[in-house]
Each structure stands twice: as C-alpha cells, then as structure tokens.
Amino acid sequence: MSDEPAKHSELPATSADGLAERLASLESQIGRLTDFLTQQAESRIRRRRKLSLRLLLIAMVVFAGVFAWFSAVYRQSRQQSRAVDHLVAQGAFVMYEPRENMLVSLLPGEVKSPPSVLANSLGADFFRAVTNVSTNNRRFQSTTDKQKLIESIARIEQLERLRLSNVTLRTNDLTPLSSLRNLQSLDLTRASLDRGSLPWLSDSQMRWFCAAHTYLGDQVLKDLSRCPELQHLNIERTTVTENGLQHVYLMKQLRYLNIKRCSVSYAAAKKLSDAMPNCVIDWEPLIFTSDGKVNNPAIRQRRVRFGNTAPADPRASRRAIPPADSTPRSVQNPFATSNGLSAPTIQVRNRSYRSGYMLDAF
Figure (cartoon, rainbow, N blue to C red):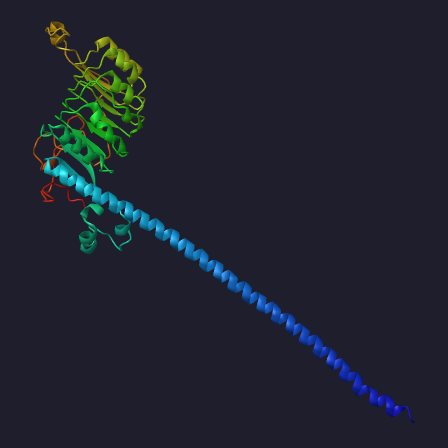
C-alpha cells in the first residue's frame, strides 16, 4: 500500500521532463528554421542586388552604345553639312538619300519624313546622307581651291558615287579620297591628271571606274587589278599600252572594258576577249600615230565590240547618276535599255537646300 502513491507521484515529473525536452527540441528546430529563412532572405537580397547591378550594367552599356551611335551620326551629319555647303557654293551637284536611322525606325507606322521637331533640332543632314557628288567645271584652278574641294569630298563618309570631270588635278591630290570606304563609282573623265598611280584604289569597293581622255596609264591598271568588285572600266583615249593589259587579266569580275583609241592593237584586244569571255570589250584603233601623223588604215577600220550587249550598270540600283552637263534639274537614269542606250532622264524636284539641289529623299 505504501509504494503506490510514490509511483503516482513520479508520473507528473516524467511527463514534465518529456514536455520540456520536446519544447527544447521544437525551439531548436524553430531556431534552425529561423536561421534558414534568414539565410534564404539574405541570399535573395544578394541575388536581387546582383541582378540589379547586372541590369544597371546592361542599361549603362546599352545607353553608352546608343550615345556612341548618336554622337557618331551627329558628327557625320555636321561634317557632311559643312562639306556640302562648300561644294554647293562651288557649283557642285549633290544628291541626298535617306539615311538608315534608328530614331526614324522606332517611330510607329510608315514614316515618310522625320518629325519636324527632330529635323529642326538635329538638322536635315542627320536623316539624309549624301551619296552622289559631281563637279563638271574648271573653277578649281588654284592649289588651295583644289585642296579644299578634295578635303570637302573626303569628309562625306557615305559617298558612293563621285564625278570629277574637267578638273585639273594631280594623282597625289586624290589621296584623301582613300577615307571613302563606300565609294563604288569614280568618274575622272577629261580630268587633267598626270601619269601617276592611285594606290588607294586597291583598298576600295570600286565597281565602276572611268578615266577617259586622261593621261592615266598602266600603273592605274595595276592599282585597279586589286579591286575585287570592279565590273566596269572605261580607259578610252588614255596612255594605256598593251603591256598594261596584263593587269586586266586579273580582274575576274570585269564585265565591261572600253579601250578605244589606246595604244592597243586589234590582236591584243582579241586575245584579251578570248581570255575573258564574260567581259564585253569596246576597241577602236588610234587615229594618230605617236609622231602625230594620221593613221590611214585606222580610219578605214571601224570600232569593234567583242562580246554581247554591254551589261547593266553594276552600281547600286535606282541611284541617279550626276548630270554630265551643267543642268542641275535632271539626272540620268543609270539603267541601260535593251539596246545598251541610257533610259530617259529622271526629273528632279527643284528644292532649295543651301543653294543646292536635292532629291525628295523621303
């Protein structure tokens, strides 16, 4: 009888100890869970900070890229504007085309012209690029005038076509044009050039080259032989000789060659044509001999065309050629008709632009 109360008295103590242990264990688990949640929260905060820093860096890089692009285009536009001012003041023909512009492309819908706010604040040259320049007079007589002419042209980075006809220049004067990486067409017809070389042509994208009625000779053919895109070459009445034709054999993409009235015989022209079946060659003998006498057999011999009809203009499509005459209100269609003749002229809207003329680009 005396032991039974003792056993009943021990039960509450055991239950209390077990409950205490459970509470301690639960408290420990809660503590570990709290530490885990705290660590997870800190980890999320760190990840968010890293993500924010990454987004910030990406945003800074994008902004820097856009700002660099904007600065480059704005610099080009201001440089182009000053160059055009000088060229137009000297009577040169200047043609504009729409510039591929990010600001205009981001605007909704079909945009035919930039908003007036942007055009007035950034200038018209920011949205238009000069791709065609032509001068056809002898106004540039002094060395300073010629130097300013070439320097102004060299600042038009998007220029694709250039005509410098009837201008008195030396081959060294044309060296600054090496900066025109987009130049595809160069017309030096009747320019008073010496017999020097044009080494910068080797690094150009030239497709169309004309030096008719100049003193350029075999050295220029050597320079042009390194132009992988050259397709049209006119060297009529130049000092090119049969020895210089060895460089023409290297022009794999050439599709048209004019060697009329050069020191090249019919046999040499025929041999060249046989070696280049895809190239149309126009040949005509010299009328005067080297001592100034009339070459009577040459008078009786007509001009000869080796190959089929002359191919289409290799330059960029739907780009007007500068006028060959002094009329600034019409430009010649660059596309040849089926008979090889030039198509009708394209009328240009006479729009005053710093005393010059421009196409309705938009």
